[in-house]
Length: 273
Image 1 (cartoon, rainbow, N blue to C red):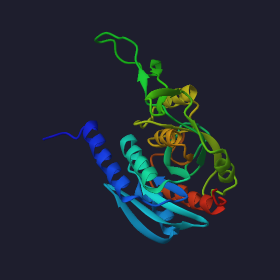
Image 2 (cartoon, helix red, strand yellow):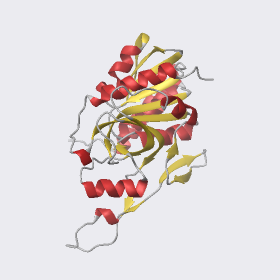
Image 3 (cartoon, rainbow, N blue to C red):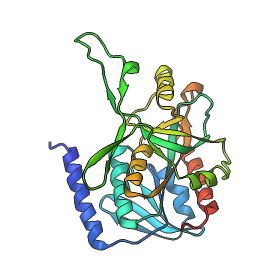
């Protein structure tokens, strides 16, 4: 059986991007993303005059929320899916702002179920170099050395390091912090992204101490990097769906609380220039 490699994905993405370029696309004010259906369901329901747009294997729903023309994107979970969906969303809809939202695991002990973090920063924390160890010497994840996230700058291909990740849009953060979270508390904080689910409390504490993370998930840091590369405004919201310090297991329905908060944010946000 043939495996589907990253090279295959790159070829698919290239073909879809060429298709997008050929069809032109339309402009929206805001691209709103969620990795799972529960994370975007209430946002889709809030759209007026909604219609579905399919681009390759990815789905978008276009309509209006308040004064904004919005494209809602079901990205799928993880780096490769959110990266592909973001590139296609930018190329297809030329948004002025990207809002990435969804569920997350608490890394800070003060966070509980349904609390929401508004992303002051978002970063990729999944890159490491390990120490040299011989056979039988074991592994010590808490001694690994993080590598800074790098993003291509300009057409010359130069890679620029962003060890602290990417700042959220200040004006959007201000509006978000004035938006009510009806199901929990609201905090400004740092969102970390990696293909990891960390439930070992020593590891959770290490991640928080090392990166300053308040929550962990799998998309925001990568989407933020692409928004920076394209020069698009960006903000992320993450609702706590599991809290290892409190022994709270993953609760998928928390995604609805994040979606409700996002709808309220969109209604509060003034029309974009």
